[in-house]
Image (tube, rainbow, N blue to C red; front, side):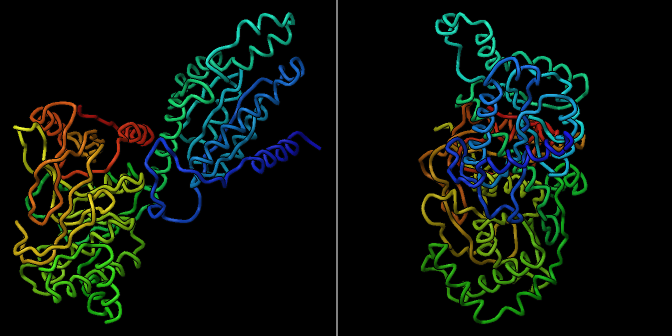
Length: 514
């Protein structure tokens, strides 16, 4: 039997030993949204440990001890992220094994490698793997506890055993060597330091896993674009080729005539079922006329068919329709259906805001909601910013049930019809914008703040009051000077650090305001 055969058996054993099916809520991040995953297949990451084979015969029990640590890391990753499959290779301790494991991880198509430094290891056991797999690398320099128990350690009077104990804490020894080699090889990497049970270190690990998952889902997301731009909103105009290059998403250009066809063929039973769904999902105000509810339900049935036929993960839309009553009928009855899609895992952005629907999709994957919004007004007496928008909202971030209300006029758009009204629940929020800057590059613009109590504008829109760590006037100035479009996505919770990690994986800039 050759070495490669034994390595294959070893890798298979390690994978089987790793508990990948334990489900538990991740308490460090918002609960992710399973509906945002394009398929039922798990996203794979590699957990690759390194050590030095010379040590095992010198220090009894060291290998088993370190391998146990790695098993615990694998189990915790899988337990806190059941949507991710951890491919645990065990400890690789020489350059020959490293090349074989590199080939193996490449065939598994992992999205990232978590490189666990179990003890001192040669950098020649690292570089081949990373080069072969060519995915983001997160280096884990996690020692067993905060410090060695010096009194017990020095009382051993057995220098061999003492050295073995020290080597179990020797993660820091390899960190500079690995970083040096990666820097010289122009390999992007990210270092997490701490202990095996260090909550701050695990917060970082969980954020990296969340960012990796977002990147993988975005790459497989089909983004629908329906209609055309709101003429003259030059900030909204987007470069779909550039966005596809950064995010890997596919853009499906949709025809209004297709949506019209689906609407015309909606059955009476489908329309009645959709009206019942409206009653379940919305607080329908008594002023909503039955014929308006039915009109919106018929359009909603057509939207569902459009999304299903094209397998869309999100969509941006706008169409004035003023010169065609059939299309105007669709556009003036589209908000309830698009809100339903948004609240059930297919975010929809109005005004053909393609960049912003990507921001909404990121928030939705994180389980934070992600609602279409824009700056409304500053309340300088209370030092708060009011943000809102007509059109699709996300029920997950609503304070109470989303209201379905009649609007006598859609401001800036033709016609009238049903809209939704909601207030964002009080507490921490994150704002996110996908920006195309003056150099044509894509970047993230992010801010953390709080949704706060106080009066809002009850005009058949989503809107709320927000406070930030800097004054409202300065916040508006600093945010605007980064050059975003005037739309943004709002989600509940604070996840700017996850967004920053996603930006690093994508190779783009992330700017945080405040």
